[in-house]
Length: 277
Image 1 (cartoon, one colour):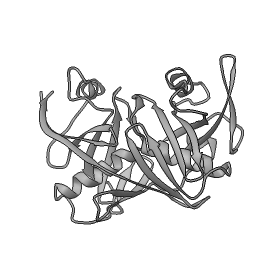
Image 2 (tube, one colour):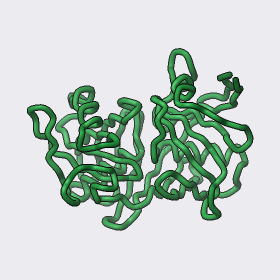
Image 3 (cartoon, rainbow, N blue to C red):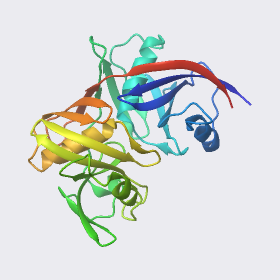
Image 4 (tube, one colour):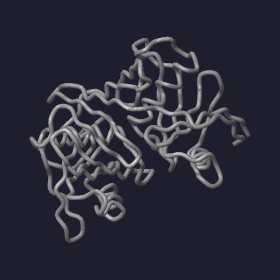
């Protein structure tokens, strides 16, 4: 049995339990993570974030992310903003820009004067093997068979895998039906996050995201990045795009191939607590 101090935070309603694993010993099994994430018997969250010491001298911190089902994932954009706000406000660092190790590389969150957080999410990867995705070479779009339907998707990695499909109206999009079906499709052996994108203008989209291991969330930072990149590559979006998610708005900037994607948005505290587990 261990008692852990935690902080509940959210980025546009995508909510997190943030645990400082530098100043307290933390050993969590997938079952214990599921209990913490449970909204009836635990704290409740989409993801659990661990703040750790960096493994190399190239970064200031290490960052591990666990979905509500207990599985570890590679990246989380909304979580990255909360991570940056947490380590700065807890005086674990005095830097405005920090280097953070993730499972797929180093990201660089920066705290802005207005309280927002901007994150250099790195360059998107288009090779299907990077997701991984069973397809013959990188393309701007792919056809995916779901039962008797053929679905057109864009598929890229933002450090974690994303499939993006364009819809006429996100309010009526079959997120609860197609989200799980695409997320668990055999073509994505490790699963995939699924974005449903409605283009309003060249600089404005609406987006809903079904996240593997969590279900539909109120916001997904890497999903917003992925949708912007997919739309840009199809020639339908500009370099700077406002992304409206159910929980609020993110600003995404991408200048094209080999360039990093920049995401700006809020990070909000909810409450502090401790849990015996």
